[in-house]
Length: 76
Image (cartoon, rainbow, N blue to C red; front, side):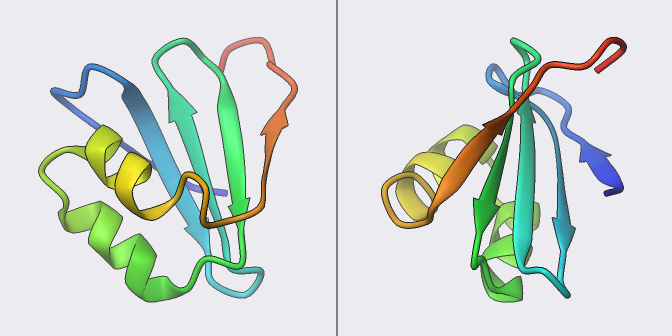
């Protein structure tokens, strides 16, 4: 999944979206990566436009979507 790098965030490194699978993937500065399932494209577009990615995640993703943490990979 192709990720967009986030600049100026104190928490989020990058994020990407698979519209076919409706999966939003977020990599944090601590190198942890989470996949959120059943996320529609409007939520992804909102994430792209949000001035604070961390606040957007807290408000619109956490507690609303099923998720899993991916194993950490070298180079991520």
